[in-house]
View (tube, rainbow over the protein chains, first blue to last red):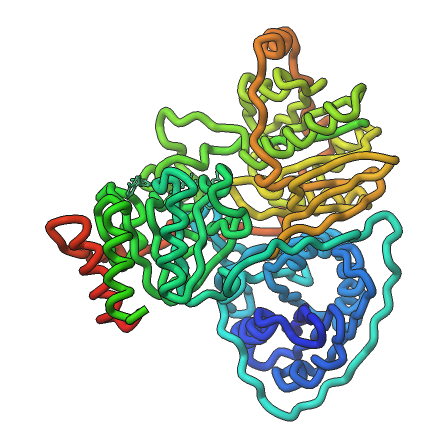
Amino acid sequence: MDILIIAEVKDGALSPVSTELFTAARTISADSRVSVVAIGNGVKSAVLSLANLGASVVFLAEPRDLTPQLAVSFIGKAAAESRAAVILMAESDLGADIAPQLASKLGTAAVTGVVALRNDNGQLIITRPVYGGNAMADFTIDTEPQIISIRPKVFAPAASGGNQTAETIELAAESPANIRVIEHVAVQQQGPRIEEAKVVVGGGRGLGGPEGFTQLKQLADLLGGVVGASRPPCDQGWWPETGQIGITGKIISPDLYIAVGISGSSQHVSGVTGSKTIVAINKDAEANIFKAATYGVTGDWKKVVPALTVKIKELTGG
Amino acid sequence: MDIIVLVKQIPDPEIPPASFKIDAATNKVVPPAGVAPVIDPYSEHALEAALRLKDANPGSVIKVLSLGANLNKELLKKALALGADELILIDDPAYADLDAPATAGVMASAVKKIVKFDIILTGRAAADWDAGQTGLLLAGSLNAPAVSHARKVEFSGGKLRVERVVSDGYDVIESAIPAVITVSSEIGKLRLPNIKGVLAAKKKEPVYWKAADLGAAPGRKVKLVRLYQPQREASCELIPGATPEEQGINLALKLRELKLI
Ligand SMILES: Cc1cc2nc3c(=O)[nH]c(=O)nc-3n(C[C@H](O)[C@H](O)[C@H](O)COP(=O)(O)OP(=O)(O)OC[C@H]3O[C@@H](n4cnc5c(N)ncnc54)[C@H](O)[C@@H]3O)c2cc1C
């Protein structure tokens, strides 16, 4: 099964999730021929690392303004040349957008947001959460190429094989005239990105208002972590939407996640199951979050969190 | 403007996780007794985006399309109560179990039957299968530009200006019409209907289309092999303490013991 990987490159550097796609490719088959489309700016600088990860052919796509439509056009060409049976991409801003559009262009189908892959005697079993995380579904795709977008952090980054070479092919595509990106507006964030943070403190509707988040921020700062939220605080404007955790927000996988005043809906929990340790603070002993948590405190956060914060300060000398 | 909105009827996604059951033999969700289906929340956001476009561009016409088997007319008439001009229910047993490419294929035939459109709005995903594909596949079938995850959609000078949610903020995208836009929750909640709207909707009937009106039901490209509930270890260790303050202190000690602080 030949595989085509879509690797996103920014300023010459490979996005971390792109290296995870090579591990996914090896899960599908240890001896597949792997081609890569390196897409972004500074793609040439990424060729060596892509070759070392196992790419035998690297298609270079360096558009001036990257729209998903343009990405689909580039990848369509690489797909035709590589004749890959499987196309792997990350479920990133770009990947989520192009997987279906590419499927439509190539007359095939995609499965998005994938969390597991299994090769069952040549048949790929593709797993993803559905129904807001209440259920898991195993799918197969009957047409080729099978297009699969994979959630970040599902697979470990692939180790470099060292000093390999790859054939490079430059791709050209025409910018679609009917759509363009005029501006990118980045929302200022403090500290590490929530997706990459080692410690995340999440606040829910149980905080009762924006003030509670000031206390969570103190706690997170002490732990060298960041604050996130369930959906209601984001809807209410208590916390920025870029910090929403869950299927519509960010998927997180910190070493420690502390959920404060969060009931643990499946839509929230499916965004935090990659956390190594989950601590839940909730006054309702029956709350669903305790099913996902490793440690739990049943009590009023207004009393638990200040005591916790003071004690951590004392223990860490912070 | 001629606006088309895709609105999906789904099982209520906000039921407590404990009431969620699957029939392993049929690979289907067992609807909990007494819980009625709802309009998919993302479809509601798409409808709100359409209503805002109509507010800003008087004279616009909104046509709402819903696809499925045994659709609940009274539920979906909410769109009419809010100001949609036409409700088209594509309701046929042949459409009970479509995958995303097939859904988009049927929707493309329906859009071609409507003939004229400037913008199609859909949810960024539907809260049952959560795949986020239908709108984007439809754009592909219609050969129209697509913008996903919109948090704002405006029309001026013959062009669409869309803010697309990305992980660290948003992109501003300009698109020609006709275009397909998938809408995210950040756009804001669907407005509530007023009495006048509800009364007007009472008198209006949806238009029904069958598979025969749109061509045969397309086959599946994506097969569902197994649907099951994720196994989570329920082994939560409760932190002891006579008072919440003491629990807080004990939690800190536990985190230290685990070398997490
Ligand atoms: C399509 C769809 C997508 C969604 N996407 C997401 C998503 O990405 N992320 C997300 O989070 N949600 C999402 N949701 C919403 C989700 O279904 C829940 O509604 C939401 O997660 C509930 O948030 P919560 O736990 O903060 O609030 P609630 O469910 O209201 O829970 C509040 C909790 O706080 C506790 N509490 C109250 N006061 C105190 C106190 N003083 N001390 C301690 N505990 C207290 C209560 O016991 C309760 O358990 C989505 C829903 C849908 C339909």
